[in-house]
Image (cartoon, rainbow, N blue to C red):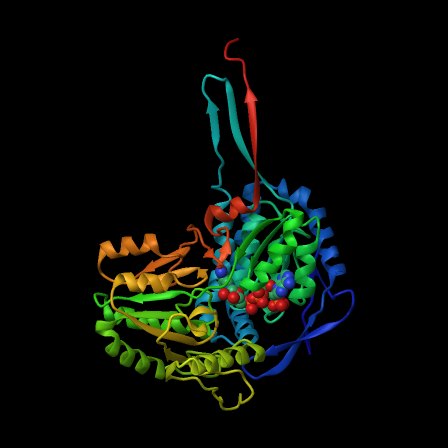
Length: 484
Ligand code: NDP
């Protein structure tokens, strides 16, 4: 059986304990590879490699760093088919999605930050009359930790490690143990691209053991984490006494506000995607639909008809819309939420049941599920499900829609469907969200700040925000004599 290995100091290696975890293929429900169960000893080895590489990498010219990163981007692109298939098998997502989104985006992350670092600049402040000049040095932090989740495995892993190394840091990174395969394959690409040994070290294992060891390592000075809000809180508590710099991209329960004056057909097509893309396992999915009463009946009918036409099936088949959920425990969690919704009086308009896919009977498949809800305070409206489950609530006017949209602990993203420009501006300003999409969804320009408010996180990634996070600003103040 295939054995995944850590990638430390430019070499593939087993965990020191030689202990292994099972890696499941969610589309068949079978174990298909083994993952090293790394412990703090392995994180210490990765740290040492990163630390040794830092003096040279942080002094490597921006042109050279950029050149290597662009080579990594090219190699990811050149290996699109292999990486996309690996992602699909490991995660359960449709191969078509991995090919169109996940892997191209992983390549773009390296290309974008490889270019961005050549344009990154800092400020100067002249204290006029005092004869001093201040300038800001932006220096790499040193060795940093990056921890990423299972929903967009290589996409989110590279979203973190690319800006970290572009800024001159060396990295100890951990992908989710649920989906380690593409981060493992990336090691070969890093070597082929000529990334110096030790600049990026990839350690596999469980969150509470390997992830925790990265967070607890006293010399790893910054942590960039994407994952659940409860894990983020745990990491913040563990890191606080060591005053680590933290970027936390956490959960979401994103509202999708549909007004009667919107472009209806476009809204309908995009809302199907924003509800169920990647089996609803995207932190940005619009899991709470609020629809204006005037069009609510028509919307429910049309939406359910479109959802019913989605094909749940083998992720490798070209016409599959929804593949498998990522794991058995996750499938059980989502099914439990559907039961909670039922017990809360939710009206299941479509779905709610597991699907048996021919020749893949043990895979983790679930129907896309649409639930009409009367009360904004029930658990299905307030808690993140992170699966193919969307709720529908109606509203009378803009004020009521806004009140319900903001009435959750999360604040990651929001979508507004309207052709009223004034409403667009009013709501964009008042919604509790780090990202607001108007008449679109998941449109991303990598230069823009990305992140959430409230319990959806702390800090922003993307563009120069990420490069700022991964550098330490130091003010240098020079006093000069004004005349000879
Ligand atoms: P988790 O929080 O369970 O895990 C995220 C990562 O943290 C994994 O690598 C996990 O390892 C690791 N981890 C778990 N426990 C610890 C710990 N004690 N110390 C250090 N690391 C730990 O999230 P999921 O993987 O389940 O991902 C889903 C969540 O991620 C959802 O809540 C989703 O909203 C959120 N998310 C947020 C995004 C954003 O940008 N805001 C984007 C994408 C997802 P392992 O898996 O091996 O246990």
